[in-house]
Image (cartoon, rainbow, N blue to C red; front, side):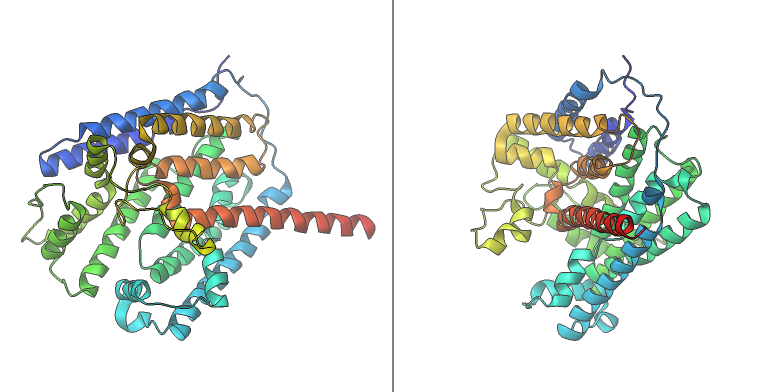
Length: 420
């Protein structure tokens, strides 16, 4: 029997892992073999778990079935309006209630003021932060239903999504919103494949994907430039030395590869900062591989700050606070090698169950859960995903929206049946 579920996405992160390994080895003159080996163990265990449930699945010849309500753009418009209201609520809370003047201090300094201040949550903050990432779901649905919609509809949705992404990025003062949007887009490609569609829409050519990647890279670098000027460090080389030194604290690595002069020195230094932020998990994971225990926990910190702290539970002793530790490294620190293997096997099997539920090629709850599972998989090579508050909030928001959708449609159905 031949699996109808594409396997290419399982290996997609490996080129990024190898690139991180080679880049860090090139700039520091030291190669982190423990990191590379652990990532391969993580990938292999996930593939085995996934394959146990999908390798014997027959190739489906069932044509994709998509109901009008699932491809209807009205739900997307509602979510985009809700997201715009959330952005407005967060801005009102921070600008008018907390007194953070984005227009005079800038994005980066505003974020610093927010982190340093002690504020009481208002109803605007609660509403805004919960619905802030609503724009993710119209993007996911647009990718899933690309063939069922007109090009003009896609252009409208993506344009509004980009506008709201910019708004969220300005309010949050960071790169997380862009990172989440990219990985959710990749997760949507995976879900398309399980719906008997090609990974990418045919109109989304490789050249356009390359252009999107370049724009995203420039956007990440732009945030570093903003933070550099916001904190009075207008020289990009000086800022590079500052951030690189922070990321390599205790690692005995020399930050001697920045550009001190030249017409393109700013571009070179900010590009290095983007790559350093994306790859600093290599030497930190290497440290965990060698030490096995860093004296604190990594995996529960995000859930504690968002959930457990609100119930008065004591915070577990933290390790590597403020750094991106890949999921295998975090699990190795907290639960050992068997914890890494068993978690990857279980998570791979879970993803396999979701893929198996798509055997009829119909969109349902499993489709959207698979998007989140694939997004979790891609993010895991950078950080343990539950340590990204935006990912956790988006997951809870997705569950809330699904329940709300069921309630509304069932009530509407009952009303229609009673009053035809």
